[in-house]
Amino acid sequence: MKRSVLYFTAPHQVSLCEEELPEPEPGQVLVKTVLSAISPGTEALIYRGQFPRDLEIDAKLPALSGKFTYPFSYGYAAVGQVIRCGEDVDPAWEGQKVFAFQPHASHFLAAVDSLLPIPEQLALEDAVFLPNMETAVNFLLDGAPVIGERVVVFGQGIVGLLTTALLALFPLQCLVTLEPVEMRRQASLQAGAHHSFDPLAPQVLEQVKEILGTDLADLVYELSGTPDVLNQALALCGFAGRLVIGSWYGEKRASLDLGGRFHRSRIHLISSQVSTLSPERSGRWTHTRRFEVAWEMLAAVRPSRWITHRFPYREAQEAYHTLDTSPGETIQILLTYT
Image: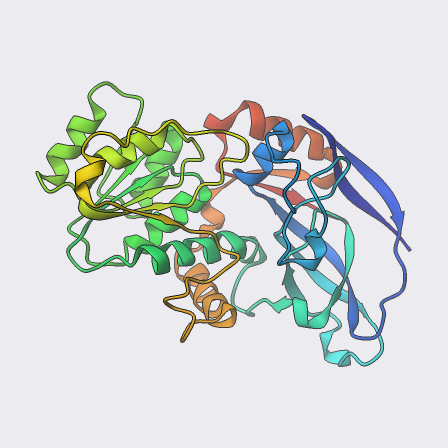
């Protein structure tokens, strides 16, 4: 059968290509895609061509093997329905609604052990946020918020909003977010932030410091995707505080001021990326356990409320153009398939 696959072919250019899809092999199923989510951070960098050319796309995911070399397919948040089973596959899989870490495409083949059945009570438009929620859960595991702490989050894109929503479940002393887009600041307050500021506003750091107090923040997250924000994050981090850097900057570089109070403040810089678990937690935590928590948090948070755009798959070029040129109007963009 034929399927359509989205390819990044050049900076600011995507194409839909027809490909022949073989029959499922033993242990595989054929899935028809219903929804896929565009990653507003990673895929914006890819669409602009701001990615390291010598980096593997994702060695942890078989569907994303290879290098960032045009043309290539990408995407890691697909929701669909199993429509055909290969040999040695339990027939009960047919008709099952599943999540898969797969590039944007109308159909795909996948081994059953790579698929995650979607809980029956969860809407598909919530389930498609699973990778972002898993990332947010990982940020909390790495940052380890503690009762009564003062926490700051830079960036309220979808991953930042999910992180804020999870932090709001903790009994924190205060939770402050910084985000230049007004619509996202309002969503942040709805997600549970106590205060949300524009990081570009005059004297904003002084305003946040007044809220935090002289000891500043115990925990800061940098999730904006903007390297220059790191200096603001450092300025708000207190003595022996933790600064979790969850953004992927691609080829963008950061110029950091490490010659001032950072040198004497024993600030911990923590790199957090969802493809691995922190060694400190790997004795008890597994990817399966983290997924279980992520499913529970999706049911609790219901992130489909932050979908701002739905584009038919055939209009993918317009979807990416909107992501690139109208960030102030977007939080989460979905591609829909018929």
